[in-house]
Image (cartoon, rainbow, N blue to C red; front, side, top):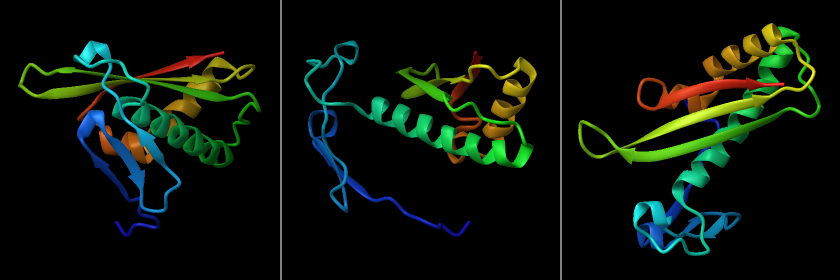
Length: 140
């Protein structure tokens, strides 16, 4: 694969630090949620950033697939992402993702087709397939 774009970011102090992109457009403080033993401070966390990125990427991929399939994407379409983190049986930690495509007014079969085809082309889905437990839902 030849990248068309490469994002660059640097983090310091892990979940209690800061993450900054090389162009300065992203500059966020990080905090650890209480559920992970942290103080639940005012910053975001890697799972929230991953959820936001995955939701945006999946939504963009769905726009592409909509054009390819002719299934009209509702104007009010949204993608909700939930990213869970927890210990794995094999050791270390793993992620679990639930994506819910909110597609009001779209017929159930068209919505399922759109989501399933999007899952095949979304870069985040391709990167996580086989490594991250992922559930795809459709909401009307």
